[in-house]
Every structure is written in structure tokens, then in C-alpha cells.
Length: 397
Ligand SMILES: [Zn+2]
Image (cartoon, rainbow, N blue to C red; front, side):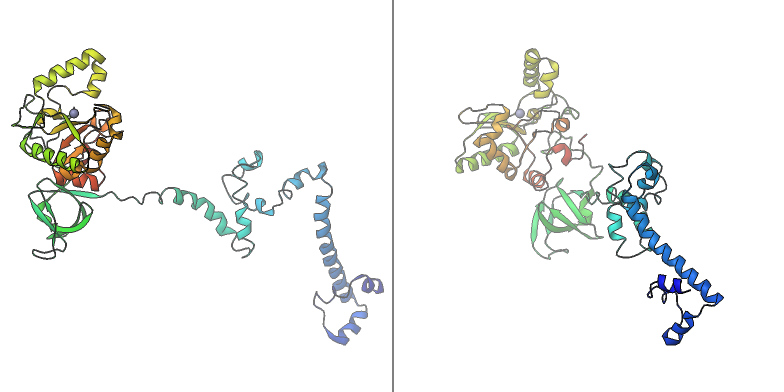
């Protein structure tokens, strides 16, 4: 007994829970079968305590082979890696075989940091969190893009700053066929964006944007003409008037004259190179390019007869007064080319074949070719940053 008393630190004895106070001390001193048993238990507990630290120290010191299996688990120090490993049901088998250094290692690391603060309970959540997190973050977050809805105006209309006839002020006078962005449809008045401005327009004055009747009437300033939508009839000839040495439809000619004048006021001298071209002229022009470059390339830079915008009397080719970059892509970098890109929309013209839109328009970049579509359409395309007329009409491939 004495041996035991001496051997066991006093602090260790009370822990198990013997009575406290002087009496307990005295009773403790007296050996009885029960107390001996109790002391034995205490000794065993102490031994276990001592053994635990020893084991840890031992594993670190002796790296040799014996511990091969053991070291595998403890070395990764990380008691943490051990935790995650068992939990993932599918991955575990693969991780052990391969060092798992690359992808598996990083994920476990974060878990331990969060787990310690809380306790045993949090361990389960972390495991379930990693698997669930990746899928949701990758798929659902990206799609915050909302596609705007557009409507066509059925007849000339006014867009007002507030709903109701006579309310607010007139924000915009919309021509038939103008395209507006629908913000919210209402039974009588709908909230729209006309250009960059918010406004209200009568709901019954708008047609749903898709499918909208395509403007195919060659007499309309909105007519769509490209390789896929040729002129009908193919040999259509518009009524034209002379302007700046070329011929254009009266509406296009008026807008053209105003634009050239406005450019001159800004010190930019625009030269008009080409306007209306008849079916016959276009046929000989295309044949000329065909002979020069072959059919494939000719059709990238020139229209077949019956598919040219020039045949509508609505298209104009511009050049610089000094002849610089005539009908070349570098015209876009000239003073004249830049002025047109910035100001043509105000006068009802759009850059018909922008850079990088060949797949949509069928033609390579032509910074000199402008098409009259009216100021409303040109303005809304500009403010909505619609690059091509095909996209404006929803017929882009
Ligand atoms: Zn042209």
C-alpha cells in the first residue's frame, strides 16, 4: 500500500473521485480490498495517461519501417487528413493509392481550421458541405444575365414619361417598326426603354418581338437585304434622286445631305463614292470581282445581283476627301471613318458590316458602307449596342 501511495502523485488520486477532507485521507491510508481495487484502477488510468504521450513521441522519433502503416496515418500530421478521408465515401479508395497530393490535399486543410473552434459536432457538416458547395457555386451563380425582351411598335406612337394619355412628357416619338425594350408589360400601359430612356407606351401599340414580320418590302427603309434575304423582285428598282453625285431614295438622300453637312461643320469632309446600283450594274460588278478573285472571295466582298443593299437606294459608300484608305478596312481609322462611326446613327445610318460580324452579315468588315434605316432604328440599335441589323431583326444565325 505504502508503495502505491508513494508512487501515485497525490493529484492523481483525487481525480478518480474519492471522498475529500482529512477523514478521507485517513481512510485512504488504510488498506482494504475495495480501496486496493480502486487504487489499481487509478494506477491503470495514470499508466494510460503516460502511455499516450509516449506513443506520440515514439512515432516521431523512430521513423523506421516498423511504423510504416502507422506513420502513414499520423505523419500527414494532420489528423485532419485522416478525418476527411473516411468521410468522403467515393474518393477514399482512390486517395490512399495515389499520393492525393494534388487535389485531395488542399480541401482537407481548410476543414480542420473550422472544425477545431466548434467541436465534434461540426465535423459532419464540413464533410457534407464540400460535396454540395462545388456543384451549386459552379452552375447556378453564373446565370444572372437576363435577356432583354423587345417589342415592335405597330404604328407611329408616343412614349411618355408616365403612363396615361396626357401624363408626363413625350419622351420619344416612335415610328412604325421601331424596336423598344420591354421593362414591364401592363394591361393598358407598358413600361419600356426607348433608347436609353425609360418611358410608357400603350400596350396594344406593340407587337410581340418574335416572330416579327421581317421587313421585306423593298420600298421600305427598313427592308432587310442580305445573301439569305434577296430583294423581291430581284430586279427591283427604287425611285431615286440625285445627291452628291450618286442616287438614293428621297428619304436616304435627305438624311445623307444633312449628315454630310453636319460632318462639314465638324471639319470632316466626307466623299460619297457609291449609292444606288441597278441589278445590271451589280451583276457586272460581281462578275468583275469573280474574275479577279474567284467566286468564293468575290462573294465575301461583293453582293450577287439582287442581294445588294445598293440596289435598294438606301446604302452609301463613303470615302475620305484625300482618298485615303478608299474602300479599305483602314478607312475605319481615318478621321472620316471615326466621325461616321460616332455620328451616323443620329442621321439614320448604320454601319452595316461591322468588324467581326461576318458570320452574321455575310460580309467582311466594311467601315465605308452605311445603310439608311431611319434615325429611330439607328438610334435604338446604337443605344442598345446591337451590332448588326440581322440581330436587330432577330434573324442572326
Ligand atoms: Zn457598299
